[in-house]
Image (cartoon, rainbow, N blue to C red; front, side, top):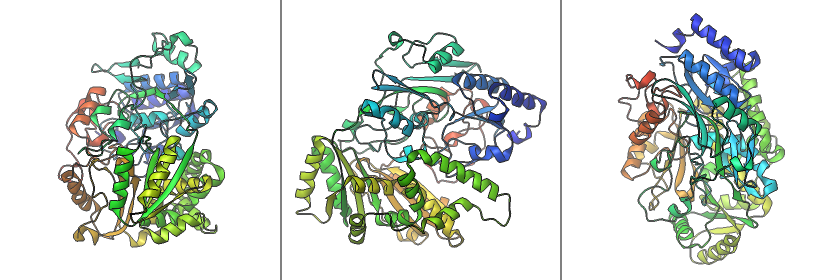
Length: 584
């Protein structure tokens, strides 16, 4: 029986009434028009939700979970819904139970521990909110670039092992969290592994945390990690034949970390890091991939001070981002990152209303913003533009403290004998370069929207190549090359995590092409997805599948993730991916 055939029963009407009694009618959405922004993925995926509830406290989340477990529905815990593989929304219609989405974004508290050296982030707290909270303490989060600009949540990052672009810190990870799970017997239980004494009864625990009624003596410091504190050593091993990081790495699957919504996570406790006293960005250009690889190996294996990050852009990505990411760039540059969630909310509202009129094009807000952006002058600095004319490969290397002088001396000496060049960015140029790289991710989608009548479908891959890989830059076989209309290459070069995005020519089977490309990655020992979670785009490997089943034995949370069963108690379902061959 499908979810849609079950939602008309009196039983589920009672569930709607119960949810409204918990969070209020205003925060219980059942109209499909209003649930759609939550039930459709940021880039892909989507399906129908019986209801979307937006609780305003940790206790309200708990009560919603109690109601949902009693009603035997599937629960999807959702924060910012910024994932790129559809992993925080329904996917299709072949579920055996209705789906309730619990959106946590109203619960955005952040509590400081030990003078800000650690924090407790609630389910809806965001990375850019954390940045603001920590600044007065001279600290910063594990991740300060990338999706923080579009409001990605702290808990979502941990649940998806996200991030890792910062070389010294690695992906989001903690062994301290507060979560609910459904036991093998179908009982909802609360597990407090935050290392803070909060009481024994679930509502007591959640209320004490929410109101911060605990004392300093109640905060323990157990021998548990609040970050991936081994990563800086792992990435230095440039001769290892495995990737430095990838999404479903078994070494970093622990309770909330990597659970991908198979637990209902209320809060996580994570480490923070000192803000560097000195900071410098170097902009590097070359036409030889081997030159970049040699620099990477030298910096990781011989530098006393690891760089902060190293963001790569191919010239094609530079150009597409310049034109089709311009509006996002201008909004962030002029209004700041805090405006981005508001912009996305406004876009959804505009598209929802435009969709009511048949004569209006789909993605009307994107079309409108694209044309508006072209009214503004060139937004990129002259030295970057000059490098674009000269070089195919662009690398933005961030350094800090003693690493600044070390990198400066190395680059000056290196380019005496090697092809390419570099310059030390001013503060303004550094901000512009990093922001230009950031908006690349959404630029391809915008390109496709503006040119879709002439193009086939989008195909995206994020792949982690082994640390010892030297032939990192992709050269497609001719039989694949002739099927591709547009290519975009960018990524996090120090860790060999590459985003390789394509738009197919009209009529091309993207799944078949993806199968060919991923098969070549398998032969090279690469791992995928690298950092965006398996979502509903990739199949979970055996270790990850086993972790999901152990974590959620009744399959009550985020059913179907990673191509797993959507049925209660992990019953077998005719696998829609069987024979597709497009995933590992």
